[in-house]
Amino acid sequence: MNKKYWMTGLLALLLAFSAGCGQKPTAAPAETSPETEAGQVQTPQDEPGDDKAADDQKQDEAEATTVNASEGTSTPPEKTSAGSTGTPVDTKDVNAAEDQAKKANIKLYYTDPEIMDLKEASKEITYSGEEDKYKKAFEGLQKSGDTELNPLWSDKITLKSLKFDNGALTLDITKPAEANLGAGGEMFAIDALQKTFFQFDEVQSLELLVDGNQIESLMGHVELEHPMTRK
Image 1: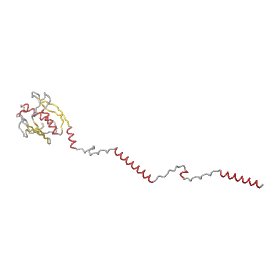
Image 2 (image 1 turned 90 degrees about the horizontal axis):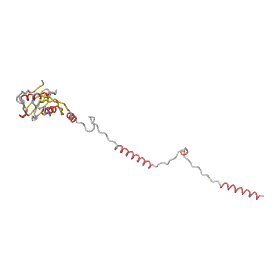
Image 3 (image 1 turned 120 degrees about the horizontal axis):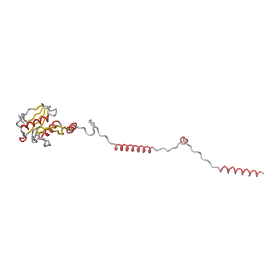
Image 4 (image 1 turned 120 degrees about the vertical axis):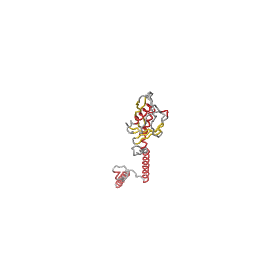
């Protein structure tokens, strides 16, 4: 009877030991940081050397961008006091250019082929300055471009000098003998000279010299006034 009980107890002990050995131990859960528990992903910390390399790379990229931007732009030319770009404007050059651009329609006087009357004609001249205007007017009296209008002032007459001062215009000419006309022609020539230059309002008197001298008569027939004035 005792042997039966002993065998039963031994069998129960073996069964209990077998049941305990069949269960596997579970691993203890790893400790988590508050960030991990909140659902955030934890990234590894960069090394100090990596931060410096990244900063250097950003600085190099910024400098390259600045250089490229400066190469793609141009500095506007400096403005001058005259409001334009480039070199300062020379007012003398501007005035000279304006003078060269001046044009005027003037009246010139000739005679008919029979030297019977004084004929008026119109001509456009381009000039620079007042004295050049008077020079162009005198040259206009020497050529007409029309066979029906004969010049009373021969192209053999040379204008040596011309001066305008305070309303007084002085012409100094050289006249060869072949440029002389008869009494009627000489009268028309002087009349043509006065009408041509007194059309300019600023001319108040006209002095005609021959080789720098005042002469009594231009061609020996008509007395010459010194100076001639507006009538």
